[in-house]
Image (tube, rainbow, N blue to C red):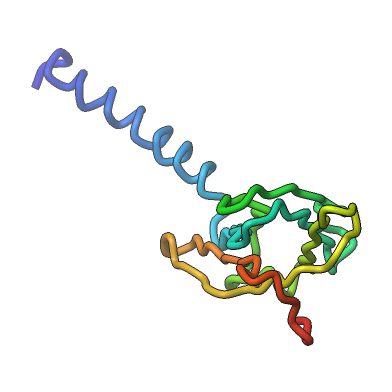
Length: 139
């Protein structure tokens, strides 16, 4: 075989490992699982959602979101080693609404489902209760 016929093979041999490494960096460290949490506003009011981390080392320190009616917003995106970790273990999510007089009231925000996006990516869904009711228990 001549060098000219080996050239395409050598180029592919050099490029393939670089492409594999770039894909691995986007997915996160090997052996880690991506957890994503979103809040769906099922009510007809603008809802203020406050996300408080249970672990003080987390970067999510007192984050606050304003969610329009029938809208969805991502509140957390984190990696965990070994297995998926529910956001219920990681954060506390509370919702409030303001009435026409300016008074702030609590509104129920519940974890209602999870979806497996890929082998190492899970998406968790919180939902603002459409009736606006609050639940008497917490996770």
